[in-house]
Amino acid sequence: MTIWPSMPDCGVYLVWPSDGMNWIHPEDVEQAEKWIPSSRVFRRDSFDGEYYRLWYGEQSIRVKPTMWRRVDDEGFSVGEQVEVLSHFFENEPTIGVISEIRFEKSSNRIVYSIEAREMPIPRPFVASDLVSLTKREKLDLR
Image: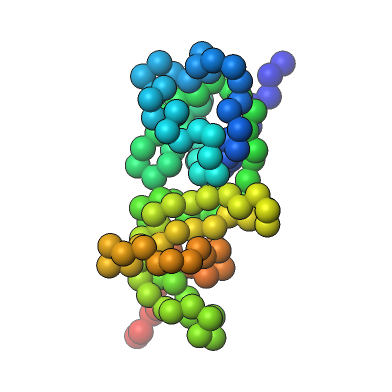
């Protein structure tokens, strides 16, 4: 009996998971070679019986079951609009878009690259620095 992981979940391919390309859907080999191996955090959301679909922002690839390093899903996606919180003036508060989501192996955490006004902010952020503008609680001003 095979037990499949609950999805969606997140993970990284820090190393190439196997010899050859037969674990990648033939139509996705070119993109997979650009993305893997890397510290990119992929969201795995479905399995069609042969391939998992991995998303990185609006782009996806299909791969057969392979070893990857699972990481906690912090609820953010590439392309998502976020507010960078001040945290008592530690950060410059701003509105931006997540341009990269990476796993930092040395600190065992996910870091986020943000672009504000189409310019990259030079330092990475962690989830506690960010609030999703699509998930933000609305204030009742009645």
